[in-house]
Length: 377
Ligand SMILES: Cc1cc2nc3c(=O)[nH]c(=O)nc-3n(C[C@H](O)[C@H](O)[C@H](O)COP(=O)(O)OP(=O)(O)OC[C@H]3O[C@@H](n4cnc5c(N)ncnc54)[C@H](O)[C@@H]3O)c2cc1C
Image 1 (cartoon, rainbow, N blue to C red):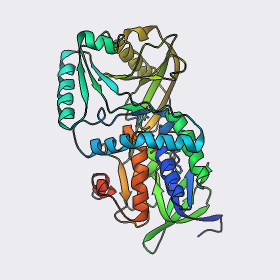
Image 2: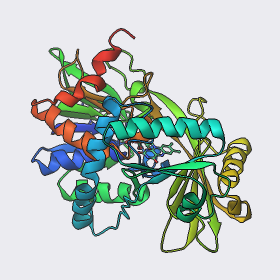
Image 3: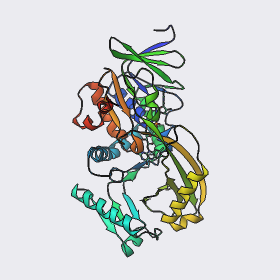
Image 4: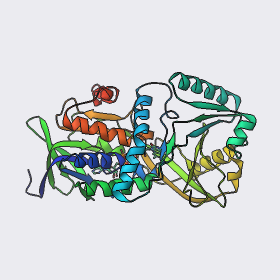
């Protein structure tokens, strides 16, 4: 080891987004000595860029392990948010009133109907709306042919979530090191024993939790390449004098999230999905496509003004599923990454699963999300 600074912990968490912070908080509350290294400031990457939707069903193309994990996490959200609010005094504005999927033409309505059918077979409550019932539910969605209301859906203020998790993790005893970039995993006798940061400091621990979002595959010393890639998303916030959208709406081209309910007419519109590496910044094309899709879904939004635009990098994986669990080849390394479009939804359940990985108890739900599946990549 170098003669630079050394610090010892039970667990080092690499990455201070929602996933790393939530795991760090949970581990610290369970009595572990935790150090979290964050390259920039906690919560400023995908976690801040997100829409904050909690959408297990809308995000599942079909029934399967992702839907089950998402539903488990959705069920954890009320108590998770309440505890965080109690620990920090911050208001996460958790809302669980559901989401309305809108079909703007007949083929889209057919696809919605199929989704409603399999959701009902899975025991999930939905309601089919058209004509007067649709206009009554969402008067401004005039252009829609039909709608499917999903009960198990909601949203949270993801920007406040990042602050709350940072505050709660620190209050639980986690040492948070902003401006510290993990560069290399350090191993000894075939297992992980810490990390070296870019400034040459070494931090020792029995366990390293890799939670670096879209950048996770860049850490040196991983036992094999980790196929997590950035999938850029742009979003736009629209401001109107009065609220025109009651609940979160989603078409096949965009979603519309009513935000900041204290201020009336703010609507977040998302999101593009772009394979452009780590190229930052919003583009005219990206913003225009979102504005067009928003006005198509809710014509009144054509009169809104653009209040803000931003972008971020989702941590994408080849199969679209997160990577959660112990590394199959390197004892002491645990993965919590690849949460793609659903890292906010999956924050509470991921933190619980990580505690079980660190304790060594494991969890049968981990199977489909194990890093094993990339062994031959
Ligand atoms: C436009 C957009 C909209 C989205 N909407 C939703 C939504 O509505 N609902 C939902 O559930 N999800 C949504 N997501 C996805 C969600 O934001 C992510 O899945 C989630 O934030 C991932 O959290 P994370 O902690 O893994 O990653 P991040 O929040 O990106 O955090 C990773 C952290 O690791 C740090 N880091 C990277 N490399 C290093 C290193 N070497 N050393 C130290 N630190 C490092 C980074 O600086 C960063 O802070 C959206 C994403 C985008 C981009």
